Image (cartoon, rainbow over all chains, first blue to last red; front, top):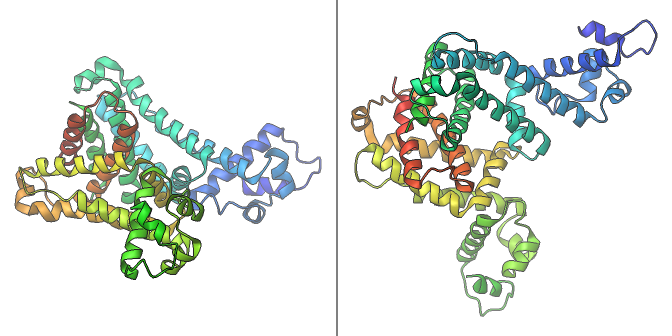
Length: 207
Length: 207
């Protein structure tokens, strides 16, 4: 992929990609770089060095580096949402555990960028904060949408504003624990981690 | 207090406070302002307007506004630690619930400043991040120190690295839920909130 992108710096006619494909490639490159770099580290210089992307080419598709960063974060968050989609197997807790496993893998594989995204979202960047908050909301909403009221009732969960408030808190806990676990498992196996986090949700929300 | 501080701008001999007392007064003013302002809003102009503190006076006690902000945050966090001290009444969960109640009140009364502190700690300010992280660590360590191993065992909690990891996550959840609850209780009474949060700790850490 990097060698393809290198061609993009030449404006010669031998590269016949649609604008959408090029924009797409730039976003893929950005999310790949974000795995091991912070947002701030994704500079024009790095893009030039890693994939021969010139300032002119980037600015053809994005108004600014900041706009590129925002688009990369949006894409990374879409990827996270997609890979953590629950599979329709087992009871709600088993489904939740599978989704959590995908989340743990995502954080593991994209650790540096994920931490920088969380920090940017907690800091002064309003645009990234909104993307992050919308994503967290969508992830927790999906738990309720997928399971459905009847199925949730089997584990004692009643959907209500209080339940949603506590579920948001549970998501904050999951994020905190997983980011720490990835750097040091503290003697917890991956399976134990997933079990603890999944079981914690009903424990927190059931009255 | 504000009228006393107004005198401090005059360097006349009628104000006979020790340097420690003056520094102390400045910190008290700072933490009081932080209740309803963000850190960024605590400017030299605000200090002059609210309490007649001149740039010269502030810089006599602190090298910079940034140093003053850091000292104010340290003081606010010390206050939080002090007022959430567990009372030696009831079982570990009741003690925890009482501490949580004090924490909820602190966040309620200092909402704007507390949110800005959490954001500063999550953002790029390394010094404030360290104060914040040390405080959160001290708050969770105290749960284990106070209760003691035997008492914890009565609620099924065994102290271990995994328990500490999950307790840190629980603290992240408490912070997230309480900050949201203060702005909108979502139908949860204060008592219900404290019960849910207190019960969540053993639910999360017990294997």
